[in-house]
Image (cartoon, rainbow, N blue to C red; front, side, top):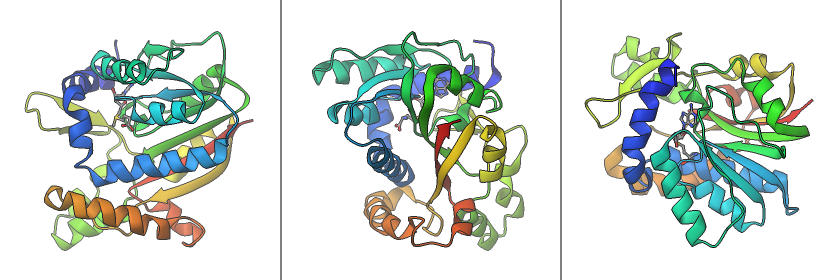
Length: 268
Ligand SMILES: C[S@@+](CC[C@H](N)C(=O)[O-])C[C@H]1O[C@@H](n2cnc3c(N)ncnc32)[C@H](O)[C@@H]1O
């Protein structure tokens, strides 16, 4: 484990793993992002069983859902804490042929014998050192023509910029633009979390030599930022209004300005 980001983030996610499911419910953006990506991927993948790798599986909720639909899912995460919760849930649910891979995505050293039809990854890639080598790595573990579904936190988040603008905090408005990424403390005073934001063009530039981009959809373009005390109301509100934000209703320029975005791509 020699990467900067991995060292900081592994400590956080290991410590966080036992509270993850409970605190996830208090995070409307997390709930929305998961439901959007799952809904989206399910529709595109269809009903024929596929071999899927859930990268950064966390506590296994998405993997379980995909398994229940009849897909063959393997789970990868660098946190032993997260993985042991995933393993318990999946075994308890009666699924036996799942590989639980504890591996750091920054090291990119997990290469399966049997390649995957799809990669699925919700809320993970912003925690990597960078994404430059990701397309080549994805090609190593996917079958030709393999599909990738992921979410990425966006650098150009208009709703956050507006939030800080009206509070007269211009520096905060640009916090997502720091080249070295940002560190923040997530409830534990002694642990820093490191992450880096990408905008849609950064992302497209990095992957387009190896992947055809089929679709990019924004998540949370116009919705208000979440406040923990209203989380349950906001979560319901997000899920309902989210339907209005699907790309067929919004002009395509909006896909650049969400809180995060879904990217759906196919190996060339
Ligand atoms: C925000 S959580 C998302 C978990 C899950 N996908 C979900 O939707 O709830 C990020 C996950 O990515 C994992 N992760 C972060 N950096 C990683 C890395 N370099 N290699 C492997 N897993 C990583 C963390 O351990 C954590 O489980």
